[in-house]
Length: 154
Image (cartoon, rainbow, N blue to C red; front, top):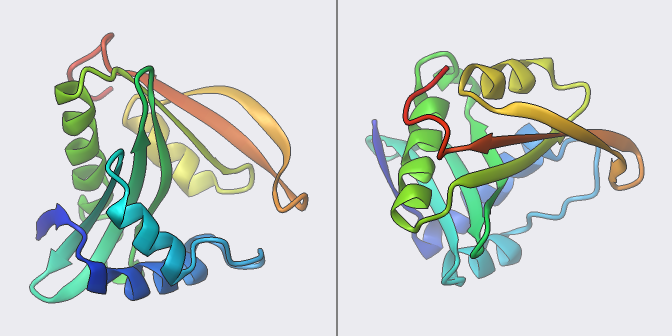
């Protein structure tokens, strides 16, 4: 498995994965054009995990002076439970530390118990909810990790 920054030709497969694995039952917001814009944005990291040429997963995180926001993270079904998600998060957290950013925020569907467990295992703490966050249809759970408190995983 190899983690690297996304290339422009990764935008379409990333957008498809987002539609199928994250945005199912919601209006499609992470279209190919939006992913392309994220790839080009200087304060956004779009990374991919590849198993040879196959896209096994991806993540999109935006950095600001105060914190980073993990917008999306997905791992293809055949690669789940094999450490791909953890590798993607580790890569992004390392970038955040290097940039001097020590707080990462994210949201996930309130009903997504597997993501909730995944992030909790990595040291992310629940810090609130956002009613109707997903297209006014579904609530979000907000989670946060302070990288300054710990240099390892929980």
